[in-house]
Image (cartoon, rainbow, N blue to C red; front, top):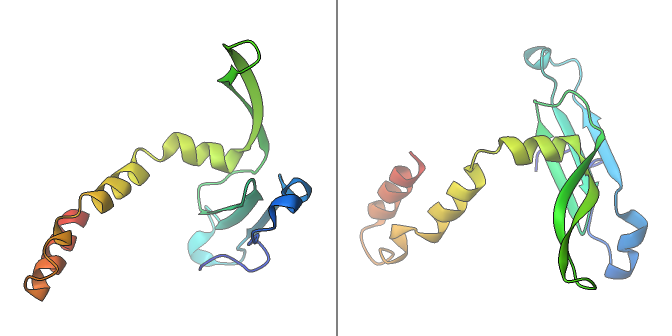
Length: 132
């Protein structure tokens, strides 16, 4: 929905993941007057399955080296692990500002679960109240 068909990466069998892991596809919408200053970019990268992004906040797409502590079973210690991440993924992770967490919590603690047998407009009222 909303992504060009050429950018979408479909799931593959587990035995074929090593062949497609790290595959990047991207497309830019051009010649659209409302988006001249910040073009619409569609991007996908295949990790364990396809991860898709649609953004107007992308300056460039490149691999960024990241570090994080990882558990090493052989030595039973934390070691510094290095990995690559796309800049668009990195930008999303650093700037999402708890939006996804708020959406998940709003879905988990919905008050209309117990109201399904009540008046039809109650669920609409609480949905509107929950999205404000």
